[in-house]
Length: 395
Image (cartoon, rainbow, N blue to C red; front, top):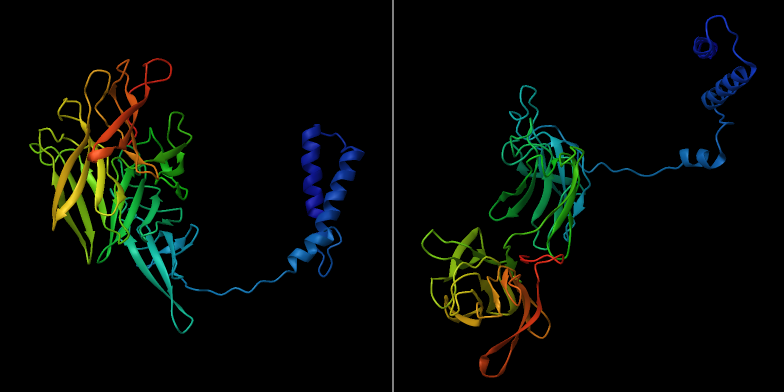
């Protein structure tokens, strides 16, 4: 303590000038500091601590170690929050471990996504679900993961992906469980939109994912970002997925497809669009309003050459039939329905077009079922192309 006092006094002298005495106020302050430190260091007593703090120090909790990482193929350095599924299994990430050849000259692995499952004996078993290679797949995850209702895993990896950053700008990924676990990169950062994603994802009810990056963006100091599915897919109650493709093979004009979830994923085309009255190039995804019925839009062709809104119905076996609900392109009507349809509880459909309408700035429209299986369009709003903006293209 005397040495601490001498060092503090010497620093105070150097600040006041060579040969000056430390003022009385400085001496009192230094003495008070030393007394405080001495009081905290006294064995068995803590006169300088408030009683509430002393009580908190004496509080106890019971810890149970569920699993100790080895730093090998099981991962090492868990660094994010844990998530539990409905069966009580625990999911998380480790910053290193996994593939020991990953990590440059240092090695040690680039991280894993893991699952912990309770055993009947009371112990826990760890299973690595995915091992990062710090390439296009990402590496060194620092945040935890989230689960969707089907048990798919979503998360961020802080490095890897684009080579526009020296160690990669990071990715947002999804792990889907089929016969094993398969990674899909949902987004690769390129520095201008963010770099080093280091936080857990926040999902919205519509499927949009939100989070942040440490670096990147216009100032280089990080971004807040959202990821919205492009055309996206929808799922039925058994987990099968349905969506559309804009082009099929360069000659055909898009398909509506199904991904059946069995031991693996099986792709099946439900309907192939052609350059005719049924429209072509379905830019947005599908809407399912009743079992066996899908609704969507195609942005080109159709009776008035402005695209169509359509219905797909299974007629027998694997055969599906398209019915055009409304043809866009007539004078005053919308043109090029890029926007995804949404349905209300009554079965009415709502959407947008990029062009057409009173000012050729696009429209918001409603389609309602009428008698005889027909559908009636009502234009809710025509964009002017002014300060309100135009060309609505939400997907």
